[in-house]
Image 1 (cartoon, rainbow, N blue to C red):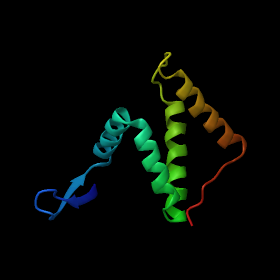
Image 2 (image 1 turned 90 degrees about the vertical axis):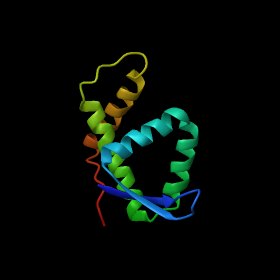
Image 3 (image 1 turned 180 degrees about the vertical axis):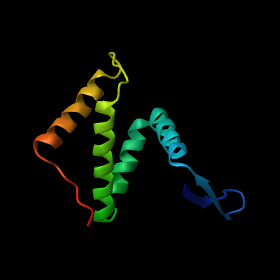
Amino acid sequence: MVLVCGKDKDTDKKVCIDLKADAIADIVFKIMNYNDKGFTNAMNEKITHEHRTLQQNYVRSSAKILTAYCDADTGTDMRNEASKAFACQVKDMMLKKNTYFPFI
C-alpha cells in the first residue's frame, strides 16, 4: 500500500488515500496514454531534481521493468516490436557489462 495525499480543490483540506502499487501503475499508464510527452517531461523534471539515491532507485526499477518485459511472453506485432527489442537490448547490455545499481 502507498499513501497518496493531496489537497481537495474545493475545501483546500489535505486528503489521503491508500493505493496498491498496481493501482498506481494503472494511473501512470492512463496518464501516459493521454499525454505521453507531458508525462515524459514531468518525469524528467522530477528525476533530475530528486535526491541521488532516488535517481538510482528509479533507474534500477526501470532496468528491472525492461528486463521483465523482455522476458515476458506477451507476443509482439508492429505496435510493440521495437519496444520489446529495446527492452531485450537493455537486458543483454546489463548482462554483458554486469551492470549493478547499488543502493547506497
